[in-house]
Length: 468
Image (cartoon, rainbow, N blue to C red; front, side, top):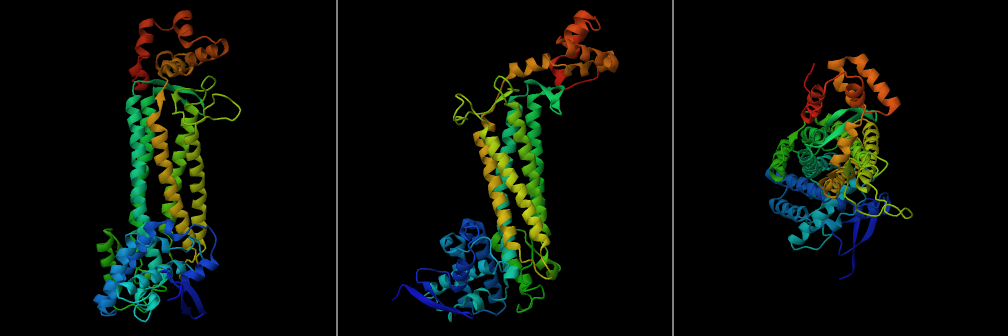
């Protein structure tokens, strides 16, 4: 026994480490594509999905009499082992490669073939008994196997992301309930507007994010349409009659997903519109999340020279020179994550646009952009919830003081005094530094104390009703 084995393809022979389950085409990919330094194994759901696709293909080919049942069953068992994560370390192809994903597809074909060979009592590389192309890739092309696995992996990855985003929304809703009796000043264009409840402000954050859960489900429905059985360009070349429908049925059973076969396989083989839509959803959520983090940083600014309406959990010293300074580091890191996702959306857009004729060869960078964006957004949502939102406290006295001293409360007087009189009060208050109360009640006598008290109850400030 030697430490290596010889494998060949039509370009020649190469030496493969005997311990490796991958083969010559994976080796060539390792030599040619050192771009991100991030291998396929870092996306275990993608590896799992590739195994699902290969198992479904083996079962369909067996059922149609295309594959020997013994070989097909060994491939299926090998796929189960790969799907369980036992061989993740063998999936080494860089996430971004040329060839429209052929290297990823062959990485899967070779690993599964060699696992199956061992199950059959043969040595790795004895491909006459189970071949990566002839058997594992039977009735397939990279152009249907890769995107189908990609969509399955995306769908499963979105489940975890949606759960994490939902928990973040729940955390904001819980704070909304906790802060329901905290009076504060609402602001537009960073200027005083009208009073509101801090609880309503935080409940609005929750509503804002929960809207995104619906968009995620819409995207999952779009990517549930697959082109398995299309083979090279959608004409079903080298696939037996009934294969596309049968392999799709097997995939539904294996994955538990509501997958459907595209009605036009030629169109489905080059179309990347579903990825553009999903990327847009991720960008939309990133924009919303970043805006919320901007608000949290503003509301916690200070402590003496800012808004200081809320306190964020102090996590670490904020300066190497300013003693006692604590920065809003979690909202800041979520902001930066959002910027990355927004940029990745442009990558997906350009890659989707760059396809020509019957195939989009840029799908690897689309997969990299979407997988990383979902991962980063999931971690950002978890971090924001665990290390920030659940620990936020309200400076209720400070927030109410700003309401009572604000000129913005003059808006509440419009129905009683009219706009012109109210504007005059606001102008004088701004120039003199006096309160709206002092001018309207004490000095000008425009309102009785009883009327003032009726207008400026807590309930009427946060749930205004018309008073004349």
